[in-house]
Length: 204
Image 1: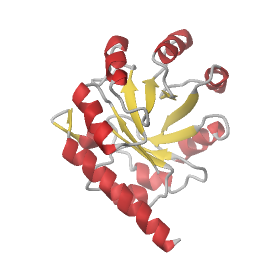
Image 2: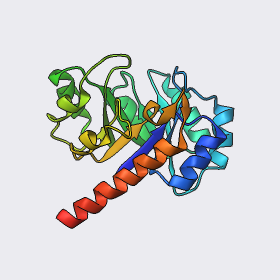
Image 3: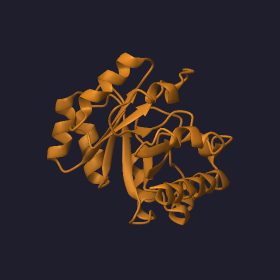
Image 4: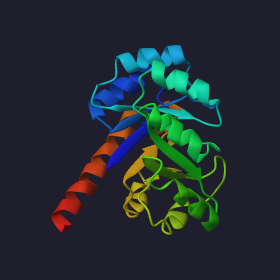
């Protein structure tokens, strides 16, 4: 199962990840309290363990800017959170980037919209709109394609997200304390996912 810790912006955050070995870390280049500048991202990526994939998060940004940042930083994945169309995704893929297309869902019609990216994006990420109290777990029960799940995941409620059998989980604020990445919370997520995976092997 993919575990992605997003909103990485301090060297300490990267060192935490190097110890815990999640699948991916996310660096946010879109407008966000966790946004990092390209120069900071370069420093962070220099100390990242090579076995952890680097993901750049963008939203409704100019294609040339997305391509420039992603190329210069040698990102493994580009994650798109806006209204980027299929052609945008396909062009990035021609340039050698893997793409995660995030779709914010509020209702079942949004789930149907997300399905159009099946077979085009490498992964589809189901998220809830920022600042909206949407039960993303209830909506995700209607998904009939492989997906990564985000939106309100914490160590305390992780099990209900894992019960959806997603291909991955994406967590940012849920592993923070007072807006800063918390090693204890990150470690708990990794431990619970390992336990879940071990249970799947035993049962299957």
